[in-house]
Image (cartoon, rainbow over all chains, first blue to last red; front, side, top):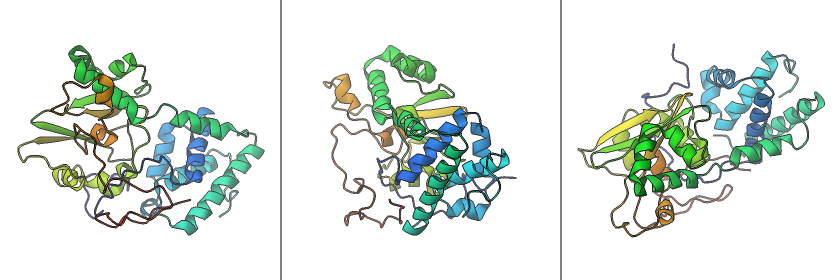
Length: 93
Length: 226
């Protein structure tokens, strides 16, 4: 079954904001999330495929309401819990 | 996208996770800054533009580039495709190419720099494969009806870059000057290369945290800012 990320060809997403945003990050925390991803992957705590899977298995409503790097952060937290690095709930809300 | 409120909340959670990982000995101070610098270092559309300018001026290089993109960009010192294959697709008088990643955001980062937000948006990912001509028109690129359009869907294994058409009237330009004409939109396939770069008001964009320009043809959706 297709997951929520598999949007190719689907309708209803509206107009494209064609803005040329040259800045790679819109907030400092987005850069920190990319740093976390690179550091944890380099340590072998998770690999790229596990990371992609963690994003793509987000519940549809959560996936669609999250910004791009919020998805990254959600996936990192889920993987850290799955790998036993974090206890469930340890990060808090 | 998130508004300022939830943006502050996620920023706090990211900071808290950093602290937790430092306490567990999984991160050291300054480590993230190094990985962020490494991520951005050398990742720029200027690299892709150099590849294009070389292909425009050196037919043998162009042939190698189209045959094996990964190896040809490495000749110029670029490492796109260290983990993936790079395929370069050529625009001609009768064919136009555009790239997308319908599943997520796969993109030739080293050659094009971090991708624009729209490349990662559901709107672009869902629509460009269904109605590419209409999508390209939204970008201001109106192609003749008899131009064939090919949409390349990137994957974990294969990344794509467009080799745009060399504009007329550029015969006397140097390779470096030619590279200066090539934009990342042209490397994605959502723009053509213009012989002279002219500022396009609807494309020029404020830095984060500032309002969209009043000349903008359609109001931009709310964007998270710091």
